[in-house]
Length: 466
Image (cartoon, rainbow, N blue to C red; front, side, top):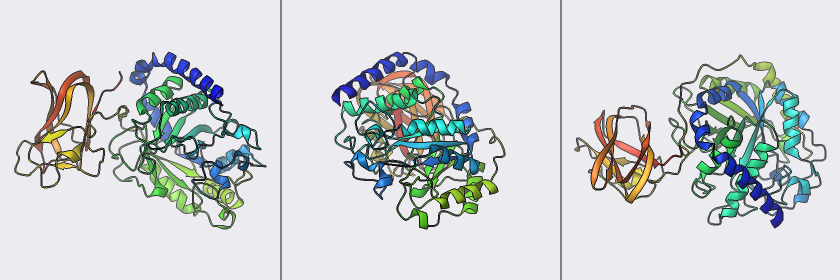
């Protein structure tokens, strides 16, 4: 096992080192608008949650469950693809590895994989072959949280990071063109694995260096504001967890997901439990598409590796009610997402007079639901971060509690002198500014004009690779 993992990691390092030389080119020339448009144009696809949980009657199974449990005796990915076609879907997305760490492809990184199960077949390969054969595009889901391999809070090591890179490298090099990777279990309140624990920027550059046109999504919609792209090429909404897109005011290319059945993975009661109403799903799909949102509907295969009859019937009914009417309207440009670590997070901060308990610490606590609020008596409020030593940075993301600030300027302290960065008048709630790299011990924003009381939810500072 150790030799296998070492060889896989060495291969990843070689690929990663070679591709890293081109990272700056890839990230500056990638046509994000075109990729986002193509993704939203796909409109409707099939999520397929199929993994060890299928056999445990739970979405989070025992991480030590024996590989012998995974035994789909009638596995038929072509049935999945034809079911997706019957609903007029355009793509699929399969759970290559869920939170309990079982890999359903022929990986060299761990023995905890499908090739050591009774099936002994590469499910990812069968899935991509079947969907492409049926003229459907291919996406993959991958969980960062991995309870079997102890990739969880307080136990993360460099070997875990190398395993993630090796596994993603396999998935992006063995199965042809991958339209998108949906990542889960990262920077979520229930997983508690931060973008620093497993460095997001490194993973993002790795994915883009192997497949520049692969759209990367992290299911982080619960945390980050709808008005900006943070750690994702596309805004994501897990509707089953209560996350909802603003169908009237959405300004970002988006993805919303929902299970057709009562949960993500197959349960023993699924064959006799009604699935979601097809006309309602079509109404949801149509409404989401009008809001620049791609809808992915999960259908869970049973323990034989097949869809149940009630799910197949619902998909056919959806296909009778909904037809793809072509590309979505042209999206507004978003610029590239924030992908770097926030170096202002939890650093010492200071400000002009605050409003009661809403003090300066709330504007860099990595929580967009809290904020620093200026006392209304202050005519020109200011807020600053103190790094304690010369620090390099080239990007600022200023997120308000509500859009209100209309004029402001940014400056940094270098060798005891405050120097200007820029004057801003961006009126949106999330104000992202990229500029030439500077070195400073402090950075400050001064509010020159606001329509009402100033309140900053997060003041993010980043040193992006360019």
